[in-house]
Amino acid sequence: MRITRTRTAAQTAARTAARTAAGVAVCALALGTLPAGAAAHAGAAAPERVHSRPASDGVRLIPLQGAVNVRDLGGYRTYDGERVRYGQVYRADALSKLTDTDVAALARLGLKKVVDFRVPAEVRYDGPDRLPAGLVPTSRPISDNGLFTTLMTVIGSGDPVKQEEMLGDGKADAFMREVYRTFVTDGPNRAQFAATLRDIAHGGKTSPLLYHCTAGKDRTGWTSYLLLRAVGVPERTVVRDFLASNTYRGAYDAKVREGLKQGGLMQNPDLLIPLQEVRTGYLEAALAEVKEEYGSLNGYLRKGLGLDVRTILALRERMVG
Image 1 (cartoon, rainbow, N blue to C red):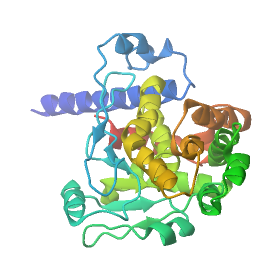
Image 2: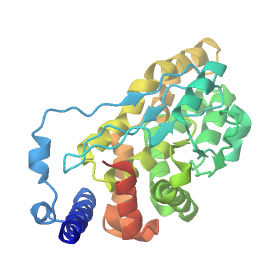
Image 3: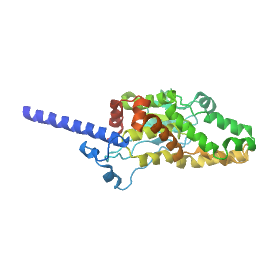
């Protein structure tokens, strides 16, 4: 019996060590800090074998009446073929217009924490979150580099010449690229992203967790990008999750533009499209800044956000299995 117990303990320790080694390898591979060939030596499957499998990664939408971009981050495959757990982390747009039915739907998710990335001006305009009883949002404002104020100014002017001057000729696209750069360059912004990722990594009492901004696409999209990459989801899959906001927001945003035109506030509401959409160029602007300032995404997580190896591994343990 004593020998059996010893062997069982040894086997358990070996499995734990192998899982940890695999986690280190997959996280490093996902962040571009480990040569692909080294993954097999650390217990992780080579990415080529995983990529050859049929694409089964999907987007799990939480259908609500008062929000259009609420999703479960679960279901995505990692480099080593494991899957991100459902029901751990949710991403969303603003929750201020939820119906009673929507609130009941959120209650069924069993949320323990909601993080609101909106700045005070957005909360004043849209209203506070509507949440299940006993759930109070954590305000963690991340600057949108003046995006909300710009939108209000442009629309409120009702002046087509001014609107063209502010948003035309690629200015709206350039503005959004700058918004994404501030996710990397702005210290307070980095602190808010870091706090949220730490909540996910170490907050057993805060899981499931939901984070959101106004449209659920930029600040929320960047957080989701970081989280999925950190736990070993391939870049191509993570970009697909990022761009899915265009699918889920498309009809709503088109109605907004049509309403502005019919209301006489904008002759050319299509000027707003670059502000309403997410684009790979926006993500690339942030990642170029990451490379310039920190050398790699791992450098940004470690130095820019202050996340140590244990925290990144804890993210993997919580999210993948």
